[in-house]
Length: 159
Length: 159
Image (cartoon, rainbow over all chains, first blue to last red; front, side, top):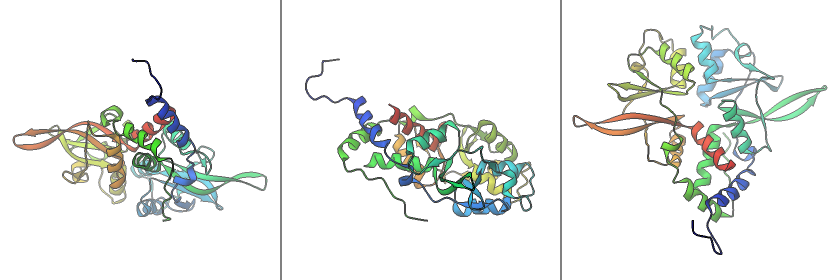
């Protein structure tokens, strides 16, 4: 390549500048509202909520704090597994804490995207940690999904 | 739902340069393999394929060409609707051409992302058009999803 003189245009440094800016974009600016049901909700009612709200994942709360998550894939698994959807509560089929991933309001969208890809989930609950009677509880604040990341990607390209 | 808060960045020129570069990234560089079943496949077998391949959407082919698509959401709908999943073929529950969206190999990932968001789907079949006996047919080449866009977003940030 010809030696660069004076100002030169470098694809690489441009992407570096870009990524530094993007790393500052926080989850709180891109998240959606969380859709939450209680553990006692029947699988059937939870699926109806999933369709009405048109989301891929529902969060489950117990006493106001996050206790589990359940996705379209989990529901489909219990549907073909012959679960009695009107009788079984979501608490019995959800993925329960501590086996779930979460993200904070002030974390970057990039970190959320990396977590989503690494663990092959569609979305993450956005939470705030609280200590209640000596125990860490998670308050559900929002939801960040591949859709939110895709939206950010499009917004950045259109900027 | 609360109005979405977009991301606004004042230093536009840097993002303009970025977005010009990104617009050149083509679907063919980021797509995944398509998972395809025939119209005669039972809904049950198609769901099993969905789980084995761990995809959100399956494409349906007739005589080797795209005839429909069926998503996790469509399957869940037929599961709670009481469809006899072992008897009903996917051809009866899929979304059929021409009511499906597609994208080309040489289209940009940005265009794919915009189509995905605008039409609230998880993925698009990547196709090549062929004229067979005077009729336009679509050869299924790949699959591009919100996961692929999220992956590109992460790669650009890490670059």
